[in-house]
Image (cartoon, rainbow, N blue to C red; front, top):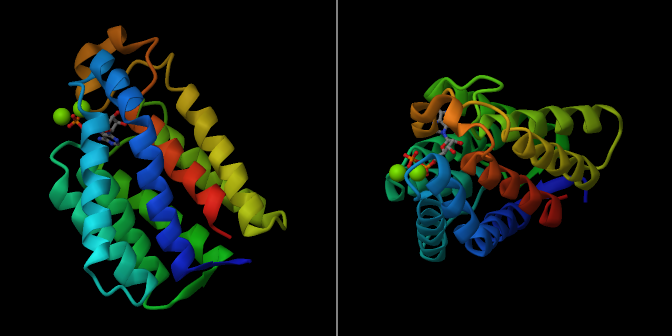
Length: 210
Ligand code: ADP
Ligand code: MG
Ligand code: MG
């Protein structure tokens, strides 16, 4: 469909949890190279807590669902990624609103609000070698594809492709934010773990939303 329904958003969260679980060793290996080796553990623990929280919760609207996800990530994940992903989902929640279905343009605006929330919290800019470097190109590709008349599904596929290209482009960057920035030039040649999980978030959306 041309909308993101409440059940679609639910499926997105569950698909993201499944992809994180599938890729947790890779995320931890990447974070071992340039961080403290816990990104896979952080994301896996966070998304397991999200699924557990959703099982016992009434989430009758997009805002209720996404707010639950965001609050759970903020409280369950100790690392930098918890508050950042948490903020993304909390902003997404406000922008989607107390509805059971959002149209493609509203969803794209919500993604943009989520990205703005990550920037407000972490101050990352393009090229700092963070999750921003996967999320920002994805948000841009989503807007561009929708403006060009693509369906939500096709636009999300373009966004996922852009996120993966953005993820790959983090390898040659020296890190300027987060723990990896302590390594400076020694972080060059390693893919950013947060950009890698962020690409999974958009791949999950492309496979179940719209
Ligand atoms: P920690 O670094 O606290 O152990 P994680 O390992 O879970 O947390 O997450 C690390 C990821 O968080 C990095 O790979 C990067 O993508 C992201 N990150 C760190 N700091 C920032 C920031 N200020 N803005 C955006 N993303 C950030
Ligand atoms: Mg870490
Ligand atoms: Mg840590």
